[in-house]
Length: 118
Image 1 (spheres, rainbow, N blue to C red):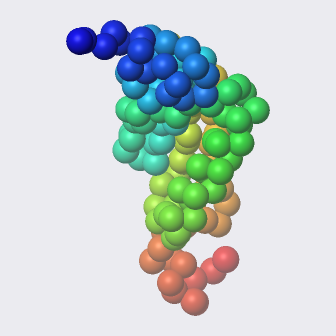
Image 2 (cartoon, helix red, strand yellow):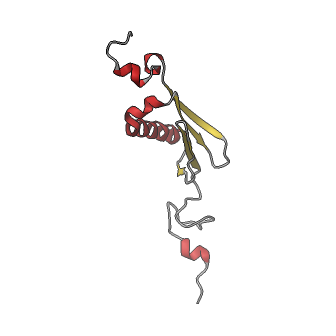
Image 3 (tube, rainbow, N blue to C red):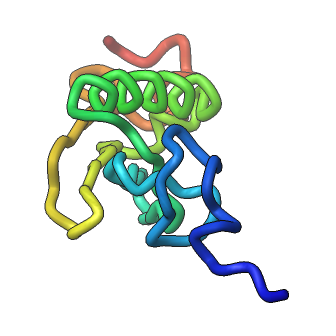
């Protein structure tokens, strides 16, 4: 006997409803994509399901902190670093930008030279 598609997915996920998409993806939560550009674009091809803009903002801040921490001193090699969040239609819903200014714009050679004027 062949089991129907709705019977196979019943009970998977947060509700006991049939799943119109691939197994393991919620039919009720939108998917957001977190694209990073630090001189070379790194698009998010997978995305993350989140309940709304509160969770999107929290995830954007968390992800930005994690990436900046992992970049360490390499952050200063780029004049600007951005995180752009889009929804599943491709519309931009949020953006964060980190930009170096002031003395950090001097080259590493100047920073390494203690006799260089400030």
